[in-house]
Image (cartoon, rainbow, N blue to C red; front, top):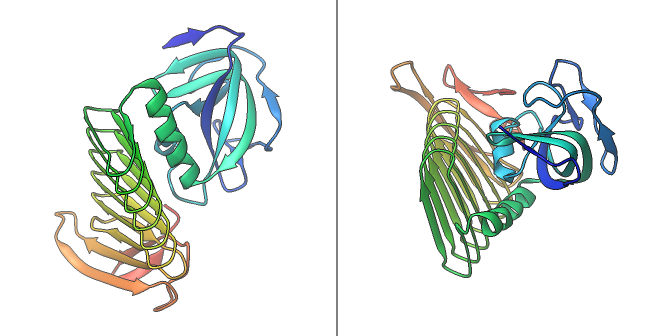
Length: 274
């Protein structure tokens, strides 16, 4: 854990529920874009103050791609205390709301500035290994890959690909024909853009896509969702990981709704709020 001077201001990224609120102690705290909030008292990570993450994709560990969770860019100031990927502060200003494409773009810029592990340019490649490692690329046909628990990978640009392996690992892409893949329990994969595909494997892993002709595939026992013009592919497994049933459908067919999470239970797709 380390502390920064009260005079410093840092840019970070914060997750919210579907109502742009947070409930750290069970009581919803409502936020509004453009407003500044001040905490009275001592700032303690995971306990008191306002919390956010300086690495954009890290916020998915706390606010996953479920239940309509929303994401924003914030400025933290006052007393600032870092603890791992989280930053707690005495003051926070909600600057703007951004979606997955915004998180991807911000992740690339963050890694480029601070770690030198990002690449830019067409057909650029980036790879890291180790727990909590980050990798990001920008440019058409660029590839990014990480391995290790809680590792994050992001790409932007047409035909760009992102992959992670390890529990709680996150992968995100933006751009047409961009693909995202994760392996490991509780891993998340998200893509935006037409013809973009997302795939996950591992229990409780989640896969989501936005854009037409995009496919969200989950090869574990987890959930998938797609937008209008897309499709989902989900598998049901028993406790020994044996395949019990498979299901694939276009959004709009077989009762499958757009932007809705589904898992397979008893061989039938079931709406869930994981």
